[in-house]
Amino acid sequence: MTDVDRYGPWAVVLGGSEGVGASFAQQLADDGFDLVLVARRPDTLADAAARVRELGADVRTLSLDLTDPGAVDSLIDATADLEVGLLICNAGANSYGRHFLDGELDGFQGVIDLNITTPLALAHHYGRLMRERGRGGIVFVGSLAGYLGSARESIYGAAKAFTRIFAEGLWLELRGYGVDVVELVLGVTRTPAMERAGLDFDLPGLNVGEPDDIAREGLAHLADGPVWVAGGNDRIVEIRSRTDRAKLVLASHEAMRRLMPEK
Ligand SMILES: NC(=O)c1ccc[n+]([C@@H]2O[C@H](COP(=O)([O-])OP(=O)(O)OC[C@H]3O[C@@H](n4cnc5c(N)ncnc54)[C@H](OP(=O)(O)O)[C@@H]3O)[C@@H](O)[C@H]2O)c1
Image (tube, rainbow, N blue to C red; front, side, top):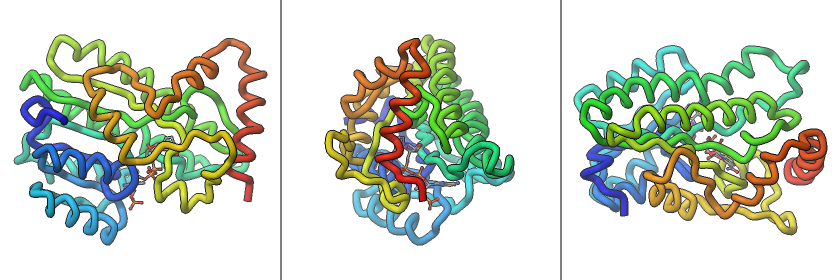
C-alpha cells in the first residue's frame, strides 16, 4: 500500500495510459491517490482515466507529446493548483531504433527529450515543491538497456544510463528532505508498446515481467532508492556491470537479435 500522506495527494504519471504506467495509476487510485495522466493518444488516455475514476480517484488527463518543446509548461500549468507528491516518469520506450549513422539527429533527439530533457525539467519543478513540503517521491523508469550498449538502441541505452546516474545523485541530494528518488530498472515487460513492436515474449528462458507486478514492486520500493532492479533481474545487472565490455556487448547483441529481429 502506497502512503498517500507521504506521496500524495496527487500523482503525475507520464505515460499513464497503458502498460506499467496504467498499472501505476490503478494501484495508486486503489490507495486513495488522485491522478494526472499524460500520454499522446486521447482515446487510450480517456479509457485509462475512466478506469481509475471508477476506483474513486479524481483524474486529470493531458494529451500531449512529451517531446514537444511546450510540453513541460503545459503540464506545469495544468497542475498549478494541485499538490503533486509523486512524479512517475514512465513514458520512454525507444521511439527511434536506428543505427546511429543511418538515422537522423532529430529522431535521436526525440529519444533524449522523452527520457532526459522532459523528465529533468519536471523533476526540477515538482522536486523543488516536494523539498519545500518535506515529502514526496520521484520515479524514473529505467531499463536493463541502460547497463550496456546495443545496436539500434545506442541513444536509448545511453539515456537510461543517464537517468540512473542522475537518480543516484538526486537521491543523495534529497535524502535529508523526505523526498525519495528511485530509478526503477525494468527488464522485458509485457506492455502494449512492446507487443506492437513485435517482441517475442515466448523466447525460451526469457524472464518477462507483467505490468501490474512491476508497478506493484516499484511502488513497494519507492523508499529503496537510488536504484531498484525490478522483476528479479539483479543477476543480469551484475553481469552487465562487469569490465569485460566487448564480450558482454557482443553476447547481449546476439540475444537482442533473437528477441527483436531486425525488420
Ligand atoms: N516494456 C519493456 O519491455 C521495457 C523494458 C525496459 C524498460 N522499459 C521502460 O518502461 C517504460 C514504459 O515502457 P512501455 O513499454 O510501456 O512503452 P512506452 O512507449 O514508454 O509507453 C508507455 C506510455 O507512454 C506514453 N508515451 C510514449 N511516448 C510518449 C510521448 N512522446 N509523449 C507522451 N506520452 C508518451 C504511451 O502512450 P501514447 O503512446 O499514447 O503516447 C504510454 O501511455 C519506458 O520508460 C521503457 O523504457 C520497458
